[in-house]
Image 1 (cartoon, rainbow, N blue to C red):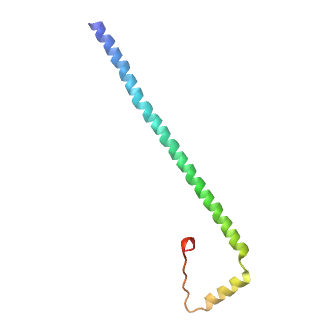
Image 2: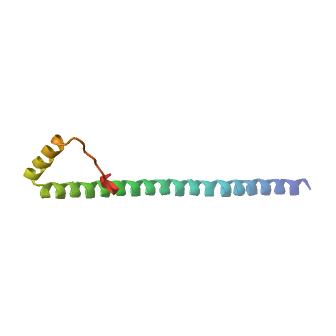
Length: 94
């Protein structure tokens, strides 16, 4: 019976090791997936910011090409001479 107990004990020990391993492996895998998702999300956020910056820069360049400096001077003079200036904007111009 002692031998059986030893076998059972070693069997339980190895089963405990298997259970411990199976509990830690998914956690490690979950952590790896979470880290990958975080990195992936970080990469996606970085790509979105880069794309927005690129589009905004192109928009500013397009605006700069269409501005008449003479008209801008006249508008600035009109604003300086005005008693009151009301500025209204919608969307990204707000």
